[in-house]
Image (cartoon, rainbow, N blue to C red; front, side):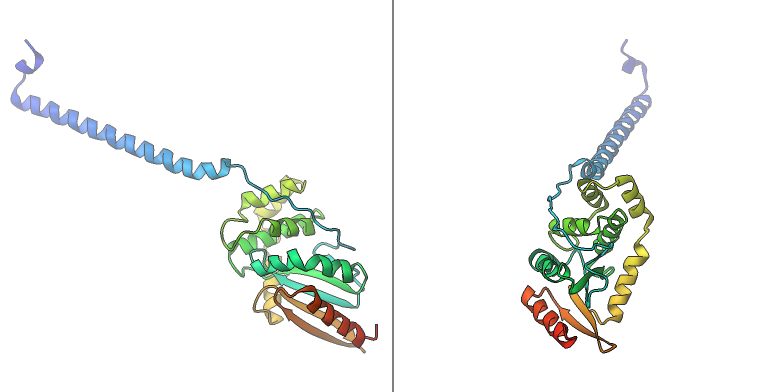
Length: 247
């Protein structure tokens, strides 16, 4: 006699209900597992995908001292307040900086200093600035500065995630263990914050902005140059300052 024929209708309904509930649980569990695997894949894949790094050849800067280049006793100091996410800062880096440094820093007339403008555009502004200072701990501030701008594609678009910053460090041959430790610990966080505070105190409202300082007859003078100006604008201001100092 088949099993069903020896069971009451109530028992048959109970077993059918139990089977249905079991099937529903299995479907639910399967959906949860598939969803979890999908989320896991979305989280893990970006970390497995190779990081594309635009190679960059830095030009040689004279008398490098961390984030400064040029004779520390030069009659003029030009301090740039910048942001690695800023497209106009990139333009200055690409089109003007090398000529300015090779003409006037190499010639002993200026000392050129790069400072960040803190958390100006977004979190990646802070992260990239801290990373450049971490590279500076290993004597590679300017090389990191250059590779950051070489890999800039926009604002807050993921150009400077921690993984990418670490890839830049590796490309430059840095001690990645020391670099990662510096970055993870926030060693230079306060320095970047202070850059922004000092920039605001100097009246900086946009990036890039350059503060040129020099001394005439014991009086310190300053000139602010705003924007990614071409070389001839800097040349005019520098030559005027040198003439004012009688040089």
